Image (cartoon, chains in turn purple, green):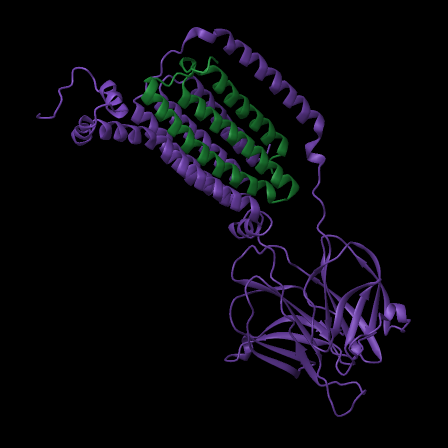
Length: 428
Length: 100
């Protein structure tokens, strides 16, 4: 028996007993306080069920505002002491107990037979992005089977993270055409630059990097981690070696003041390899890329947005002079980094969902609240309005006017309203 | 992690306590509090299933339920106050003007 289960049983017992005491208590104030205890227990269960924001809302709105309203009305009406209840419908109590017992038995059977634990959520669709990192190569169009996933991608450009369907695909890379209305290369029968089989698996996010030289295109796949961050103010970094015809690289975090405190973040990356995913705190970094002790590339004051997965692709710089020849001058590409998902049940996620998927219900509930507010005010104002009307009808000024007119319906009605014992205030 | 079944059973138990309160107690305020108990039990089941399916929709529905509960309490208590002013009682059995 785990600690969580023990905690659940204890709090569940408190919840059930507080509900029971709420039902049997003869004092309405005690009942309301037992209900508050019950609501706090439910808020605790929300915390256990990874709904922290909901738990706080439960405490402030339910246990706070709504229960204060209850207490206010109980005190206002002076109905702390509840009567024993009329014995008019005595048979109802036993009937209710019998019915609810049947309901509970049905629920137990349904839960026992239903195998709730075997239910699994739908897997998330695979996500992919495509990055062009081949210097001096033409812009490309990328197709998965007959679906175009990247259009006119030139060196250094990248697509956003796309949701695709899981399955086996045939990945085709075509040279993008420069004309205004290009024929579909699949229909026109253009030979692709590269054709590769590709399998997209659910729950995975991957960056596909077109690397190599213009004559020898390669496809590198680098896993992306878009799962929620545990720590705020951090970002993820993956370094990819996409510099063709070059030896192994070391990726070093440099300390400019004291070289002895340099940290090797990734060692011996050969072409096509990606480093382990690094998690770095917010700040400004100086990185050094080395090959056998020789400086290849230095990055100064590197910083990234929080909660993103950054890719740093070490690639060749395009050299315009020698067209077609493979370039070996090192450079780097930093595609715009995707933001990681928000944690389940976090205020951010709730807010985003509320204002996107659930915008219409949100607006309707807001309208309903407005109507409720007006309704509650009218319900409690009605009597005041009536009393005001009565007072106006019997006021001396109106009576004087009424007396001037011989037969008047309003006057006779006003006489009826006036209690017989009340003295008339008029002097004449 | 506590299995979803336990939360569903607890939710059912709390719900029937609310039903019992509505059927057995004759005080209008007590009936309202029992309705709140039932709404909470339903919310608990919704949040438990939201976690089971890893779908935040269940939690959003709970937000709407909380909002509607607040609105219901505001109107309901205004009604109770109005009834108390005319009848000088909030015993549900005495409200038989409609021959119920």
